[in-house]
Image: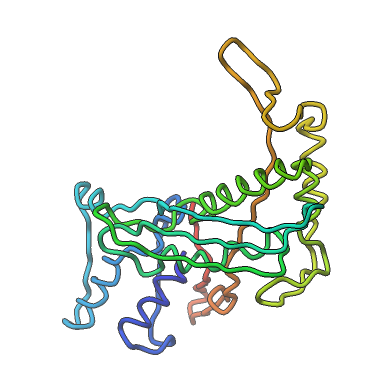
Length: 267
């Protein structure tokens, strides 16, 4: 989207927001891979320094070299809970591989927005670190860091449920937020959060109750193959930057009009 380049340009060029405008053309699918390209900043800096228009066009080889990938991560997760399965504490530590050069919006920055609205808890410690490695640069990609984060957390929730002898659906229903709850640590009141209904519909649609045979027991065995069924919760977020997505209409003397909006076709 155009919001991130706009914010980065304002910060790096030292110009007021009213003096910077980002005009985008059709770019195809976004998927997070077009959010933080630093060559965009390079072109803008050259234009400011030379007071001339600057166009930067990459060859296929350069595009491949500058291309990015998803953040790889190592996660260490601990949960504390009561005997009835109520989660009382979360200890979550993760290390993000950001490649050799890093990015403007790192894995650790996105981590702070990903973990707060899945399960309720009274106590928590969240730590995230960006680690430079001898790999190509990493950045947001199809769900940002959510797949890794939620996969790790859901594995530990399953381990907790198995140890306590609790159904995987019940432990998630017991600990998920509901409409009217207040989240931690931000204190936001959820006006519409019907995850319990989502879980119920998913259970019915998948036939989970009929298929579930217990922890470690396959649903079906075919020679050396074992088929199973599981459950998991995940959440995502979106940026609500309404001041960027307003519309401006200019009407000219020849009765033509120009419409500028903050939205963009990302495929």
